[in-house]
Amino acid sequence: MQTSDQAQDAVSIVELKKLARSMLPSSSSLRGLILSEPDCLPKEEVAIKLRVYSKLLYREMRAKP
Image 1 (tube, rainbow, N blue to C red):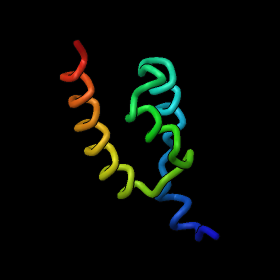
Image 2 (image 1 turned 30 degrees about the horizontal axis):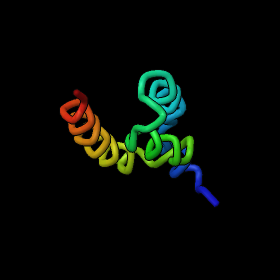
Image 3 (image 1 turned 180 degrees about the vertical axis):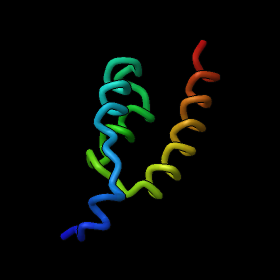
Image 4 (image 1 turned 60 degrees about the vertical axis):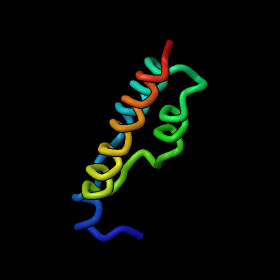
């Protein structure tokens, strides 16, 4: 159960999920990871995850022939 403070600190990643669905191939590990997340996360968690997502994106881009 979320307190009102937790709900206010939550960030929706629904738009990020839409972007992942439309721009990343179905074989992308990053796409699978993003789509497996809940629609809302605490803002501190989102900040950490975005750093990881960006590293994975660059890795996938470099691996692309």
